[in-house]
Length: 593
Image (cartoon, rainbow, N blue to C red; front, side, top):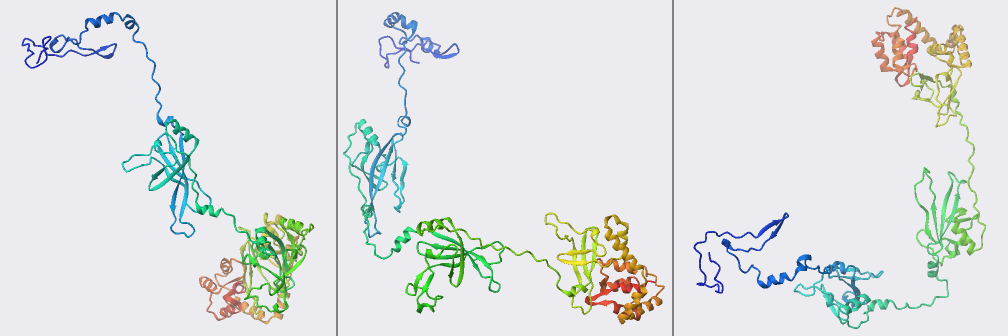
């Protein structure tokens, strides 16, 4: 370790001596703490505890400290605070330099112009030294205009230097992305700012004009209007002005004819007429919009043009003496167009104003062309054959439904069978919102039941209906109960007279009755005679008295009826009817006493 040099000797090799008696080589502490804060202390001794001469105060310094009693007492005086620092983006916020410039663009594919002058505005933003180039938008120019160069810092050379506001002045050229812009002028703010920064501005220049744009600004050539009526003036004056008329075509005199409504459009710009159809919902017609396409309609033809082939050739002024005009379309008058006579009964408000201003016609009232519908004709059955037809009504108490069956009759010309399936039948004169259906109390002997426009008169009932009406007499009117009493009295009358009269009239009935009596005597001991009727009624859900032929034989086999017997076969033949059905009423009589 090299010790401190002797006073006055330089610190050179050979001028210092080592102290071999020194045993402590620690460094003095330079960090201390006061009131919990770390402070730096200047060392007064060096390595090993030797006093440092250069860190001690000299006599002059001690004298100076003695003369500074106020400074030691009150401390150093406070200096004024420095000025606040303002960044550029705050100082130059919303401060923009604007320059007017233009650039020339070649037009190689045009015969009318060889180059084009495009005027632009160059904006320089002082806050971040960025620039943008914007071209004012010209209507119908056909050129993409607006922002040509978006805001950014623009390079001015290949070394990476950027344009600064000191590089911009009037009357100079600047190149940006291969395009040379010539600056001609600037606004007042830009001029004041640059002059305040000591920049000498060049005099302003005139903005260059585009030759093709200036050529189009020249007035158009004037033409002399001919003495005849000017169709162009008519087109420009009455463009989009249309007269609208409401008309009808009454064709009710012809077969299957009707009265239909139409809309007639008269175009004032070229005196053409168009006829449009008026469709209503569910009118049964194809939705064709036009009855007649837009065209001029001749009113009077020349004599040699009456046989002119209009279907293949257009009519010109040479074949027409007079065309239809607006004065021919008057509310309340008829006009014939292409063989159809249209009656105009109304028009729109614009048409009324036009006729008032043009022709002085103020009275164009709407004409009522609606026809009152005749009163509905009550439908009655005009067919006399229906009087002899017989039907079987079945009323289902569980669902209040009705079914109607018509027994087939040979050589009647009417196909029998199911006339109406199970359904609820609405009474006449009931509304759709509150329908009233037929109930059990409406069915009695002599009652008239109207089913979907057809009226039926009840002539007879079976025994179950009579029992039901007797047990539920409170549901029926006195007239209905009286009909039951009359029916019972007729049944109590001796049936021999009626049977003898019937047999005298129909020989086939006599043969059937004789066959039934013979079978009753031969099969009087049949064990299933009480169950035969119930078995057939189970499969006859319509209570018509008829069952299918196949089902008939299945029931007979299940009840062990001797269908192979010659008498039984003859009875089955006489009870058979058309469409493969068998009347089991007469067949069951042969097996009951």
